[in-house]
Image (cartoon, rainbow, N blue to C red):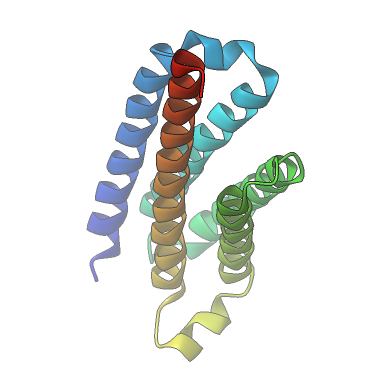
Length: 165
């Protein structure tokens, strides 16, 4: 695995997803007026922004200076975990969202653990930066799932209001 190429593509993809998400949000100004929806919109934003930033730090540190990416992954994973747990505490009983946010919080913890204790990764047959990459890929998959659920749920709610059902 060429980690430099992976993280370059990964970061660019995540920043593209951030931009695409904000284009979606611009078309729904009502989301920003409702505090609960604004928190969810912000959570989705972070689900793409934090991995993008981690990818940039992985490129800066790479395998030559792992302390750079490790410190950044720990700090950003803590931010992601705290924000995700705050959103989870406000979840409205939607099992899917609860599962998604719980999974994201767990992934953030695992990414922080890999950053703090890189000696664990070889037990999986991986270099630490590779193990962290797998966690980031899973975070993006969960972020996509949250976007899908949010968009489908909002569309369903709008249809119910429009049709009265």
